[in-house]
Length: 215
Ligand code: G3P
Image (cartoon, rainbow, N blue to C red; front, top):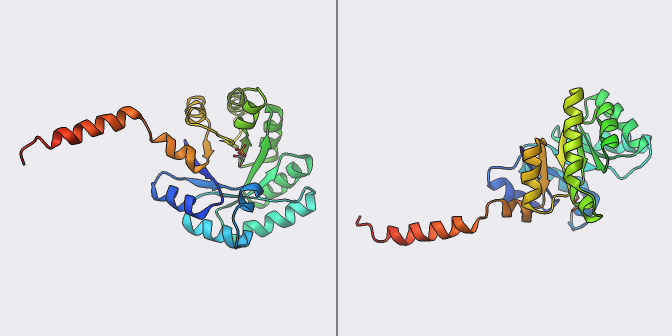
């Protein structure tokens, strides 16, 4: 299981990278809009210098030519940049072209298994199903992850399943059980993965008992 952080905040990215467990970064326009005082390209440059792994950067064009132009510009920034493209017809047409050009892609805003099949056929490097947003409308996001993982196995697709819109540690554990390839999470969720009250209590007891040991 690869762990990505879902943020454009450099402080969080560097703090997560320092843990030694971070494999990559995903951003989106909403996350980037929270970071002020720096251009999108400058921000991406700083992110690629902070993490040696795939960094998803999303296009905002919705037409084939516009997506290609933007994506090629983003890909020029660094070989680790993955062009994030929305799951629309024009987007998948562009993904096919990017794939022929050797540009890596992350197809985002996936909410159904049929969409995921089309993204894989277009040659996407990653598919991003949004589990939390499905849960929010009383649909089971993890059922979608199971379907996509099974379908990709059936047809031996090489597209990696990147579980997005993760809201809590159980999403992460379920994604691991299903066999998804990547989980992208906000810093707050990565932080929670470490925690267990019995670990804290146990450590407290070990440390207090250690004071009774003669040195
Ligand atoms: O980056 C895409 C996805 O992870 C967004 O999550 O919490 O806005 O649904 P969320």
